[in-house]
Length: 116
Length: 110
Image (cartoon, rainbow over all chains, first blue to last red):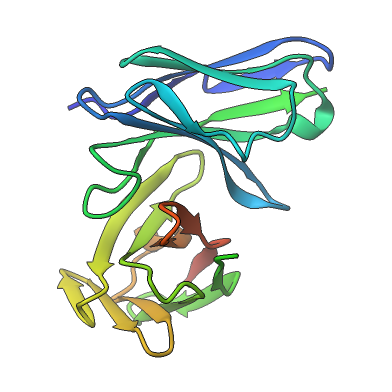
């Protein structure tokens, strides 16, 4: 039973470059979430989708960040251009039927992003 | 806005019980969760409790909920070295969001 799959696991790139993070949710889950985790700010919700449609992107820090979900089994989070302050661990999570409730969110192992 | 607060660190001796505490502000939170994060991994759901319950037990884990004080705790009995991790408390808020605490880092002393 595959969980949420994220790629790459680690990404190191120079500032100004475009970064694309990928996520495959659990099959059948219709909610997908992108989070960012840093020491200073903890775990922050960036955006979430329901049935491939973005519902709440109020956590996206600025226009350099964009997220898409072209189909039920794939989502991307893109940063262009990247900056050193974007360095963090980015998590994707998915859930069945709801943001929360008795169907909790299941997390991937994250992408550790370092912008030099 | 809604908030969830936890202490940052807890150190216990192997074999003792660990108690991790959490407070939340949204009194209409219906579900409260405990997640565990091991180094280099994502958050793993440990257990959750519905707001009409005041206790839930699952093997070595006991969750206590005090709705009046908006206080949640996670007790781990017979703490083992494998329990070393960061534990996150989270609340499903009335705004249809899950609000996470900052996490409590549990370390185990021999």
